[in-house]
Image (cartoon, rainbow, N blue to C red; front, side, top):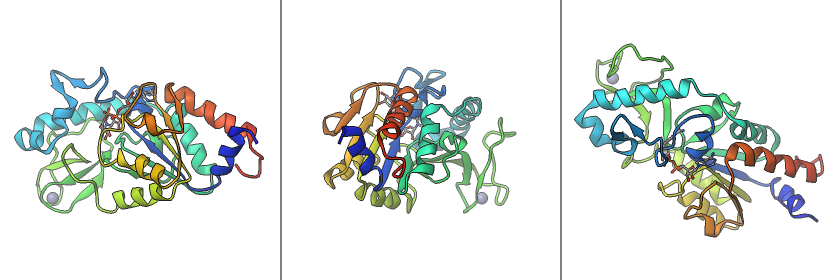
Length: 249
Ligand code: NAD
Ligand code: ZN
């Protein structure tokens, strides 16, 4: 059996994909650690924090308003589309993303575990109000809660904050039973997401990394594809399909 037909067999078991900012880079969404990680003179990683929001909510909202505008003009790329196809074709598939841009859903993915929330949701800092809000631009910055007039914040997980209840458990459970784990476009340094591939590997998953650059995860991967995801992922998926019996995939 060829290596890719062996992999096709593994793909009939639980498949888990973890994506990071790199999967959206070719759609034009800047990563935080790359050259696009600056807004005005601020480092994005300094603004995406509870401390920054407490100090200056309007500034942080201006940053998010800019990101929402930027992402609204971006389209899913072939990597997002391939992952949506994988969801449709594989019997047991979980997509976990650290991204907040909504591009997986725009590509057609139906079930996305969003570890870090979404740019397209807001929630109240005072009451339990939470809602989708896709307006670009927002009419008022910072936006106010329609229920209690409290300050709204983006429903994203900032650096230093805990992940939403339930979401992490879901991700751990999926990673712990994966037969294949694909890690696409993440630097694998932001915890706890970075631990998911390590858990999968420790439980015996076949680990594949797609990233043009080396990451702390690279030494543990069974297969490393050092190419941009928009090219590498469709090519990899096509290769699997060519070498597999039609009945499996
Ligand atoms: P990250 O830590 O996931 O790093 C980006 C990774 O993508 C790097 O390892 C880089 O080598 C790789 N990469 C770059 N271009 C690529 C390509 N074309 N194909 C495949 N890989 C590529 O992300 P970060 O930017 O450091 O952000 C940290 C956190 O901030 C994220 O976990 C997320 O919550 C948030 N964030 C989200 C978005 C988004 O929603 N698109 C963008 C920026 C940051
Ligand atoms: Zn409220």
